[in-house]
Each structure stands twice: as C-alpha cells, then as structure tokens.
Image (cartoon, rainbow, N blue to C red; front, side, top):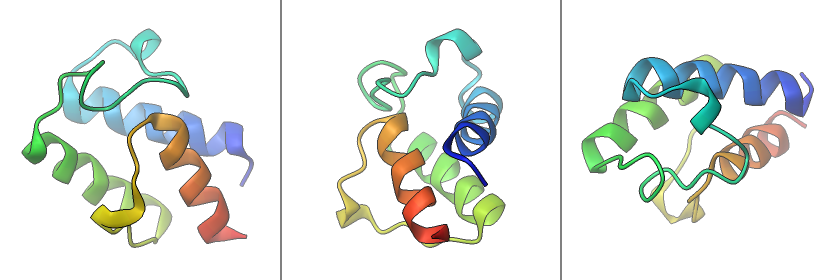
Length: 78
C-alpha cells in the first residue's frame, strides 16, 4: 500500500469519526489542535486505524499529525 493510499484511508476515517471536512485533513494537520479532537475522539480514530491497517499504535509513539499516522502505518507495513 502506498503512502497516498494510506493517507486516503486515514482521511476517510478521520472525516467519518470527527465529522470534519476532508480538505481540513492533510499531512500537516495536528489532530488535537487543528481538528479539536479530545482524548475520546483520538481513541476512536486510533482504534479505527488499528482495525483498518492491522497495526497497534501506542500513545508513546508521539503521533501528533496526520502525517505521523501515515508514516507509522507505512513503517508498520514495510
């Protein structure tokens, strides 16, 4: 799966879970600051991403942006 395909799926999940416009979800989008996601929102997004890509994301991974999520998933699938 390419990074573009991973980004597309992650965007789809974030748009659905956080009810935001797709244009707001870019590689540099900060999940908490830009999308105003609280800890429950983040938990739900992470859960959906883990299920979609069959990965386990720990909180200590330091993921803050959509790009961080894409990179993490890409590395996990390599």
